[in-house]
Length: 89
Image (cartoon, rainbow, N blue to C red; front, side, top):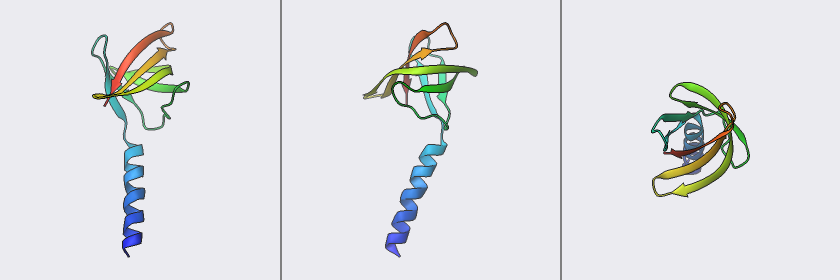
């Protein structure tokens, strides 16, 4: 019984975590950023994200853990390949 409960709890927590969007800010202009739940966030991969409600496509250049969250440097493919630094919480 305890093993079933433990397995259920682990599966539930994993799927709940996956289903949420990841929120943060663009540190240059403090705009709100949201990365949807369908994106795998790893260096070199292409993701879709919303910045102040506008859909963008970007390539993750670097990804670093910081004390305040995770810092992502993204090449915004929707905006003339401009690099953006995002802090995600």
